Length: 423
Image 1 (cartoon, rainbow, N blue to C red):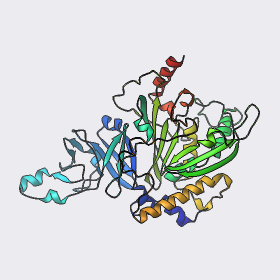
Image 2 (image 1 turned 180 degrees about the vertical axis):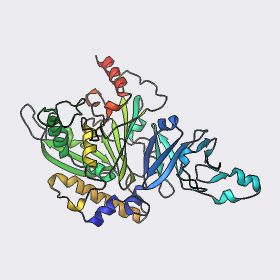
Image 3 (image 1 turned 30 degrees about the vertical axis):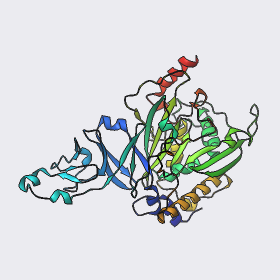
Image 4 (image 1 turned 45 degrees about the horizontal axis):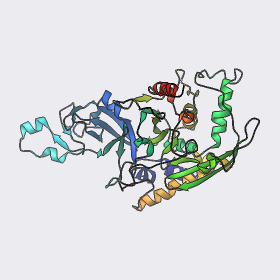
């Protein structure tokens, strides 16, 4: 277990905190580009700061302080202009650097005045990649936005799903270092929901199918250049030969990409810290086409919401990600780790916490941290792996590994393409 102080060090993400300073050295996804097509401004909370994301009339993205420095009104109601965002209250305009560039009435009264040059608000760089907008809040010079393989694959159909979770980001990440929960939360629990005598109080079942529970035999974790690899074997059971250390679940393993990404099939799950008690959970998916099929053109990458709660206020638990989100959020806004009792199944969580501490120490000393890329050649495509597709090729057999896909607007289209191609 951790002490209260150690837990605070791992979970507090605001400016000046050790974890906050580490996380500020990374680009974080904050929205889908399609969201700004619907409305050119969006309120953003990231690493404890309130900001407004905007797209001006020239197509440039900006991320600046949420409140106008003049009279402190909300700039998410501002007016996008050709080269900036204008406050709707008195017309002051700010460019993407946070600099005030126009003050209509002030300039009328004093045409030669330089007041606007003294007005500056917080501003952070924004870059688009694969239909996702990323922000960087750390020290200059900023590293490159990582070109993880799914973002640069060609001949794919993409989408972006998001959920705002009322819990700390680390609860989501530690779940990814816990292989054994798959057997119980997604296996036995799913099957209990399908039993009429099991949990009749939980009505959400339309997406559930019986789960073939595979009991874990062994688990192991290794550091690699981009994070942690988790490995597992399964016990043999009736009709199932199990698996050994010669199988892909062990030889290839499953990557957790530092600091806050899980690779799942053809998707990345980002756990973006909004503040100490809220997380933006973003699922980016790239569905590869069958051989010989050209992906349909996407004018913009669709964005969709992945719901957390049902109408009755309970967590939706009829799909894998919903079960995970239930487990994360029911630990409370910040898990009280000084009360936990860790066992042998938690060795990956312990390793990940140590990695976080080691990387925080590097950041505190001004040294380069894991997964910050500065060489464009190295960043052209950063290829990952996992047990489902160790060679990097996604096929129909593993397209089921799609988190929240029943809410996606493009998955039905992808399914039809595969049905036509494969018969």
